[in-house]
Length: 438
Ligand code: GAP
Image (cartoon, rainbow, N blue to C red; front, top):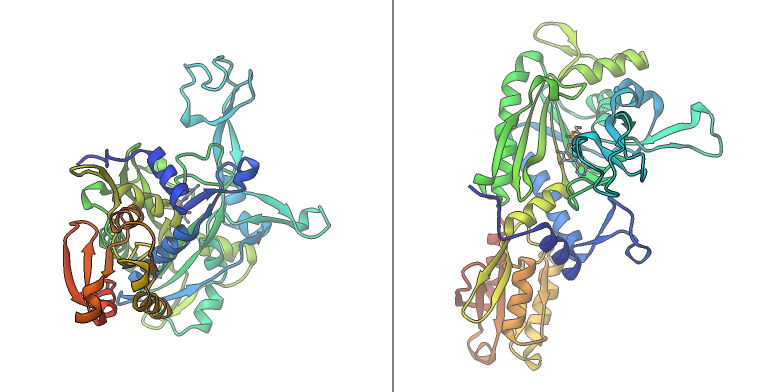
């Protein structure tokens, strides 16, 4: 299988700006490197990604509860997790122009890509957490960090969640939210950002259960991506070599996607053992074990973690869905997004504006039901189809003169471009059925 060669990063960046998926933050002030805003369509699509992820967890035969932790954390918490000491990347600097790069991104045998000179500094470690002080004080006690992963707030709340929710080992705690990393070289658009969003799930279990559960989650997470429409041949699982493992992990597998710039991590599935809870218990002096009724013993649970970035998945979906098709007289750009992921589920077109009333009303009804449709009455029908192809709308319905008498409308399918007639009062059911998902 090849990467999707029909698409380049430039195509995706241009489409995102043109159609309102993603904008560079503070664009009118030349932006902020590695930080992006979501436009109207991007906001809808990201919400669909979050919902699909939540639904995928809720469908499983396990207890999984949801959690929403703070973005700021105190130094003690991040010291205990090992991030204060270990969360860094190797950095090298060009002594001639002061440009800084991740050491593994440059060939030190070659000249600096920025200034053409070859005067590299020694490689050193660069700490990637954003540090700040709370309040007016700049004392050590006021130091706080923006979280570089969502996971830790789940670990430090483990006892709160366990004792307040009706859950038993094994169970999962899932969290969705922003994370911040001062990446040395943010790149490939949404692939490596400084402010991004993660969807993480920490699954607490016994040591005996952990091996089987690690295998279960590897398979389950891989399957999730194909179920939301990503081409299965462009996905693979790759086990980490021992020297690649993070400081907390005893085994990790990545779900990788074949981007135009090569196989890259989409999601990490990590066997974290009981590293995090043990660390937090030691550093806080608080008991974080649970009692096992069958063995009558207390133990600190092991954790299998699944962690994926919303933005990286968003970028993957766009790369995978983007197709340029040569038609008889033109090239059409189409995003073949799964209906569950597509930001707009249907376009509702009156053939001419004077026929608009029934579809304008239907659009409001469907939106009120939470089905995102767009009423679109301007331009030729062909132009309206192209607009919606490019943003991935799976279905377009047209209300014409005949609809006035027979109550039927034309449905046109995005991928095949085939058209058929259906009763207008069936549109809601049709869309609800298309959005059913497992
Ligand atoms: N809690 C484990 C953890 O954070 P990670 O591999 O560093 O593990 C997990 O990150 C996922 O978060 C990655 O697989 C990726 O999808 C996303 N991610 C990580 N860093 C990112 C960045 N700088 N920009 C966008 N997404 C990122």
